[in-house]
Image (cartoon, rainbow, N blue to C red; front, side):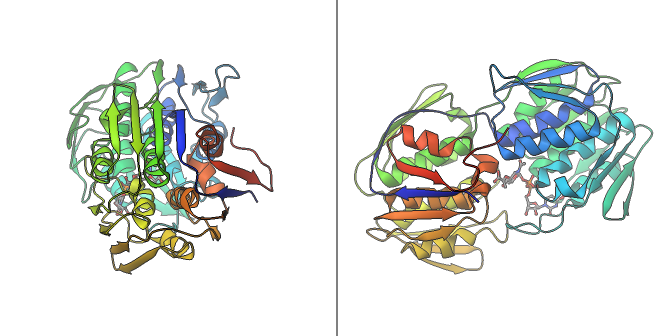
Length: 426
Ligand code: EPU
């Protein structure tokens, strides 16, 4: 199993390319199921979660090929879908597999998706996906560990989810584009990744308005056609690099970024003392000395993203002052705390709240990654810590960060991958 070894204490300097957004690419790949025509996606990052999704789509019968040149392009064609089932083996490794449920039932009248089961960051049920499809007339049953949805043709409906759910909104959006009549999604998620998916669907012939607001209106059509779509830049990867320079010091420029989608992160980092400048597709950030502690609450977009919580906590661990952090989206997303403590951080947890008292320095140790964003926070801490930090189980990192160590090397970090395969995803 691969590990990362980081020797901390070097500032980060230079330029780095931001990859395409994992959480936009996943629904866009699944949207290819909605048409028999070819769909081309560009800016698709090479990550383990993308590899898992491509495997799932191929199992269903979709032709899905990553181009060798340029490697960020994936061509998909769902003209011969033979299976309507997402098996446990794939769903258990990646919950986002649930994103095939909406498109399959909308186009083929049936879908069987294994129930995801437990998850490291919280319970994460899929009841709202099910509630929405049922409101559109699907018959839903749980059979042998699978959620099975059947509908001759889905019917438009007004659906108000009990809470704001990102993949829930995406699933219902993909189901509604081929439904008969008008669907209104109320209390919809407003994340930029949803806007990206909606824009792709519109290019395929879908009639959608209100994406980016909490009320999305969809007028169903009988068929969609192929398209070419460029996946938006990854705002979480970009924010992770910014936290890294905030903690380690130095000055970096992010290329192919989308600062317009990063407002809450940029505000907090400016509050922490980073000097930040943005253009339409770049961000420049510099940090001199120690950052100031910044408290925050995670919220749905446009609030501060839960996917940035662990990384900004790592910055707070070495900041001047005390930060109070509240996680409101997932109930168990503090597993990085005990690992950060092993590096010398002073963090107390009380329910959903973490109190981080900044310390003058961290000291390198062996730590274990527990989930994707937790891994990223340990990398940031390792870049600052005195001596060597070894991060075990970095397959979590490979699920969602493309070439993290190569990019950090390019910025001057002392980081290397050891053991195991040494490689990254398809
Ligand atoms: N929820 C329910 N029932 C549902 C759906 C959600 O109770 O049917 C709850 C969840 O348990 C959670 C809250 O609602 O407490 C919000 O969950 P949401 O459905 O929005 O999360 P998700 O769609 O499963 C996506 C991202 C996550 C990100 C969250 C929140 C993808 C593939 N995943 O998950 O990304 O943390 O939204 O922004 O888009 C990551 O990239 O590291 C990651 C975990």
